[in-house]
Amino acid sequence: MAVLVTGGAGYIGSHMVLALHDRGEAVVVLDDLSTGLRDRLLPDVPFVLGDIGDDALLDRILTTHRIDAVIHFAARIVVPDSMTDPLGYYLNNTVKAHHLISACVRHGISRFIFSSTAAVYGETSGVALHETSEQKPISPYGTSKLMVEWMLRDTAAAHDFKALVLRYFNVAGADPQGRSGQSGRNATHLIKVAVETALGLRPHMSLFGTDYPTPDGTCIRDYIHVSDLVAAHLCGLDHLRHNPEAFSVYNCAYGRGASVLEVIDSVKRISGVDFTVQRAGRRPGDPASIIADGQALRRDLGWQPRHESLDEMVRHALMWERKHSNLQPFSASP
Image (cartoon, rainbow, N blue to C red; front, side, top):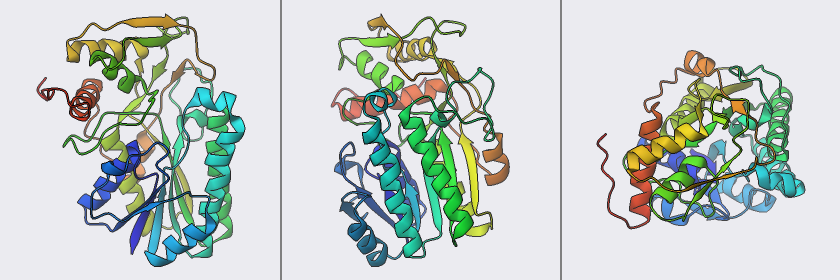
């Protein structure tokens, strides 16, 4: 039996494939390569080029590879883009997820892990968010993800189907062994952008909004190392295999935040480069502060993060970017 990873050639998905492969799981990747990169994947991992909305393709994959669990990453993820192209986000993130979930029900696949987002909570007061906190997304991106959560909840209630929803906060860093990292084109993730600027790959970076109701006026986010995030998925997969709960939701985060200025300062300090930061207005759909209460994931699934330092996330991102950009290797030492 095998685990199907949709979006497995993307940033987080490729790390998931490595983690599954490292512990001896059979893995199959489905990706349309709209943002993913084929060379992120190990040569012995079966790869299918295609769309999760293609029913015939899904039927063929689920039958041919004897899939018994699905980890679903494939989605569009840029909040400001979703404000200008809401229908595109509902198509890619919600409608196509319906096709994937339906295929799982048709084929009797009863284990499903969904890559959700902190954007389902919307604007917050700065207090740590619990899984039961009110969900009022302020962007089509957040709404498109929340709708999939509802579909999974209702499908689990109606069928022999177990679903685990993991709500991500801000994912950062790279594989500590240097096997994968964030290589997507036109990346918008703050640490990625700051690292590219430090390495001279961008002439400058923009700071969107300095008048938020936060201590330094910039947005605060709860960052999580990508390796710790995929470890949470492994815990989730084991949970689905050995526990009776049909549907559950967990926040994936450390429970503390860092502001945009704090992240920029970390990148400048660790890279040794005082790069140019241009101040700009707020971006639509960006809440002032998002911090999680991630204790349930530790308590219920036994998750034990290993890379909680912001500086470590920055250091690994710099190491990967230097390698990926054919620059001089960046020292891993503090």
